[in-house]
Image (cartoon, rainbow, N blue to C red; front, side, top):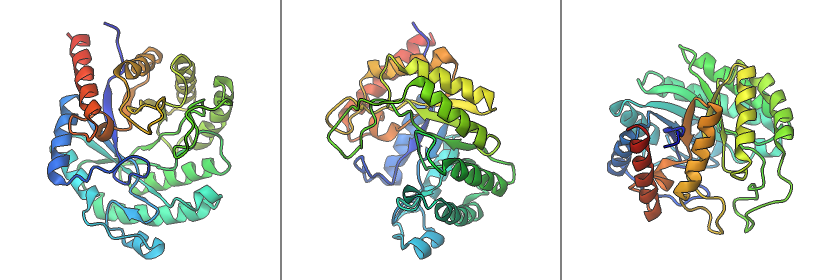
Length: 317
C-alpha cells in the first residue's frame, strides 16, 4: 500500500461564483463538520469572506464602502462555533473586491482589506478557533504588484493578531489546464514549464518571506505526469525562504467538459502520492463540502469520500 499525503484541511466556499451553492444552514453544516472530522480534517479555511457585493458576515466596513448586501446569516460565527466544537483551526479568508486588484489598483484593494480585517479581528479575534489568515487573492505568475499585495496584507494581518497568527496563500501553477473557468475550453497549449515556474516564484517568495508563512499551491492546473516536478520546485523554494509547504489538492476534475464535477478517486490518489513523495507538510483541498462530502449535492462526492476512507484505513493498518 503506497503512502499518500492525507487531507487534514479544507477550504470553505460560501461565496460560490463558479460552483453551485448548496443552501446549507446550521444543521447541514454541523453534519458536514462531523464528516470532515471523521477523516481527520483539523483545519478549515474560509476561502473568501466576501466577493464583490456578497458577504459571509455582516461587515459594516464593506456594506458602507462597497455597497455589499447584508447577509442573512453570520457564517463566520457559525464556522468558528463548529470549528471550536470539533477541535479544528479556522483560517479567515480576506475580501476579494472582484474589481480593484484585477485592474491593477492594488493599493485600493489593500486599503479596503486592511479596514475589513481590523473589523474582523475586533469582532472575532478572541474566538478560540481563530488560528490564521488566508489571503484570497490568487495568482499563478509573478503578476505585477502581487508581491506588494501579499507582503503588505500579510504583515498587517500578523500585526493585528496578538500571537502573530500565520498567513496562508494558495496560488496555482500556470499549466495546460488553466483556461477561463467560464469558457468552453479545457486545455491550452502554452503552459508554464517547471523552470519558468521556479524562476518566477523564486522572486515572489523572496519578496513575501516573513509576511507569509505557508504556501499551498493548487495542484489541478498541470497534467498528472508533470505534477511531481512542480511539487519539487514548490517544496525547494518554500524551504529556501523559510515558508511552510502545503499542497492544495483539488477534489474537483478539470479534465471534464462539465465544470466542475468531483474528481475520479484514482486521479486524487496520483496527486496525493506525488505530494507525499516530495515531503509536503500538510494536504488541504478545495473543497470538501462540494466535491468530497457524503452530504454533497453531487452523488459522486460521497463515493469519493468512501474510496478515500477505505484507502486511508488500509494504509494505516
